[in-house]
Image (cartoon, rainbow, N blue to C red; front, side, top):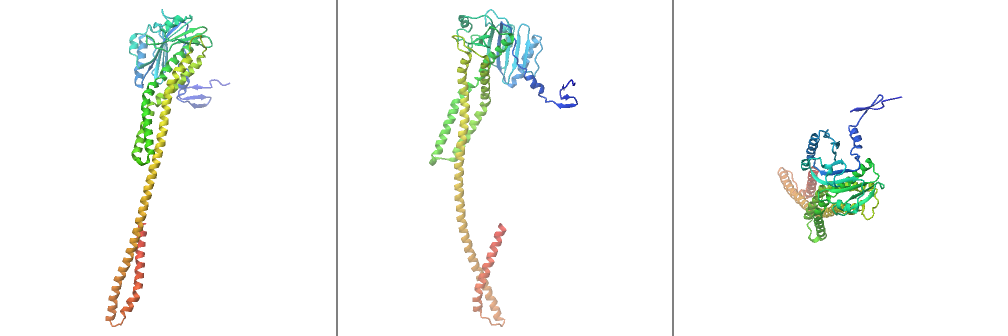
Length: 440
């Protein structure tokens, strides 16, 4: 029987005599499954939750603030690489979680104050710590968990006469009430009325409600961007329509100018898509998380109260659809610009091809003229050379007669003319062929 089947260290896993290399990410990946667990809370409990948006440059400053806070209470601080930190400070519990583009702080304290929402969870947290918190506050909510059933009048007072949303959740183990409004203290408010929740179930329900509150705020960060960019995108669409109309009016078009306009428009569109791509992709991801958490609530109706799922879906979905519609418009604009550019380039290519054909035709005509001139020059050259050769032949015949031989110059020159012409023509053709061969 084998024991100690796996012996793990930083570099290898040993199985009997075999040594297997271990991925350096194994420990990190395994730990990720256990990060951000639900809190275990007892009823009654008050919680203050905040989500703060940070840049990468502010992460170090955030860590230093948490480190100083832990030193003040003489507790162990988190490591620099930690993505979450849960610590009991005695009078309250702090849960800090680092996400991709924001961090969340949850202060949990057993019991309730004199009223439901009186800052009881943060009573022992120094105000200066809140004043110096790093980043931009995106979401802030006070949540209370109790067992007492609240009347309609008490709910109206707790939510400062705002519309109260509520539903029965967790298989009839609790009621949840909220308004998704910012109240006089600048915080949102959530009330969980526990019926049969144990500490673990209460923690899971709290986590879902806080995530719904946080993720819907993060999802809606793109909505102001979409609204501000919509007129700009409409102007770009109008410019493309004008270019297409100009292309259709073939008598008054300047293809080069239109191609420049299309290239400029394509550059602006791609730059706009690059600027908003991450933000809008994050919006879709947060929206999916909100929908997932709403499904996990397993809501049923409370008489006379609108369900949380119904409210969030009805109010959040139009904003998300607005962002998605802008992305679709930009993608469609990109495709339309590409089609217009392709059509215009085809027209430019056809124009260039026609110009090339005209140029080739002109070159062919010029070649024909040059050929005729060459033929004429060849004929003149042959005649001139034959004339000079006949002159040389005359000198030869005179010399022969002077030397005592009697030669009929007229007959000799008459018979010599065709021979000299043929020889001269052959010589010229050979010379021209040799020159052309050398050029090739």
